[in-house]
Length: 410
Ligand SMILES: Nc1ncnc2c1ncn2[C@@H]1O[C@H](COP(=O)(O)OP(=O)(O)OP(=O)(O)O)[C@@H](O)[C@H]1O
Ligand SMILES: [Mg+2]
Image (cartoon, rainbow, N blue to C red):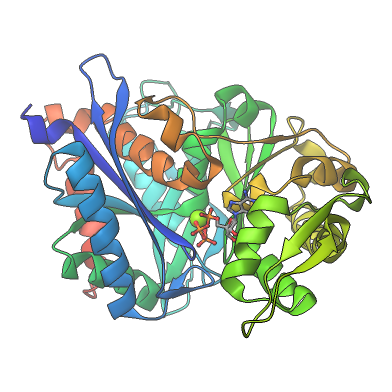
């Protein structure tokens, strides 16, 4: 394996920031973060690229910074995709296993059968995530290959996205001279970084609250069961502060990060802060509680939307491990406490975990997607027995999938 083969790059193209995380995979399977670059994102709205030029510029600057820090040239990236165009569906397929014992080929066929569902013309499949296999009606099987049986059934979660949104992401990366190794649903990536396996087994809802969107993924029995995107995030909180405090968006965002809280009861009524005014007027003093009074109803509204989504998914009662909130907005004071109150289940903040190197920098929930992309990309190598058999590797399969966004062969 050449040195370049051991490098994995995650490029999180978010509404608020572009984060480029570079990691080196050691021979022992340990991932060390060796470079990070971040730059404010200017060309996205609600998780979707709306301005190619600005996005390209932001990506270029974030990637350059990461290249400098890591001392390498970045050629290929794993990137995320999000936005309200994303749809998640549960589907299943059935085939007969020919030799009375399930082979890798049978598994491929049953997955193919499961993907045969009607999707709108402007959408394409992003992920086919196996949930479980049933052999001769015995359910709960995770590794079917080698087992005896004649009837193989697969239950899968299929994620589709708008062709145009995916194309624009690839276009932006290509313009920066970057190949896209694969495109990953952002909450799938984040879950790689912040969830523990036992949480996924007993049931957990991951909620990534970013700037423009809130991305949800529900896990049970080790597999993804439900995905959803709510087009509300931290930027809405900032906008409420702009209106409520009559200050600029930049100041409002800074004030939110520094003094914001989403539970009035957590802030002492005596505490005072200074609000910079617009138009050269002098700053004004204000009780810090006023900010919480503005933020609390909006966060409450967001949590109610998430709760409704969980109820709709049918998994609300089944997530025994509760809720894990991540993304930059999970840093707002009181987010965990308010969620516990509204959802009436255990809640924790999810910080990226399981990597070495520059951990201090990437352990912020803001980097959940970036770190998750690397772990996802690494998993690709780890579980690619096809490479040894000289068959088309998962990498080239990912490539074929990437090409389908541009061609008509998908
Ligand atoms: N300490 C903090 N307190 C409150 N909010 C914060 C804090 N730090 C960051 N944020 C907010 O988090 C949001 C950005 O989060 P993040 O970096 O996860 O978003 P993103 O990935 O760029 O966006 P998206 O995933 O929605 O496309 C911004 O709205 C920002 O104001
Ligand atoms: Mg994000």
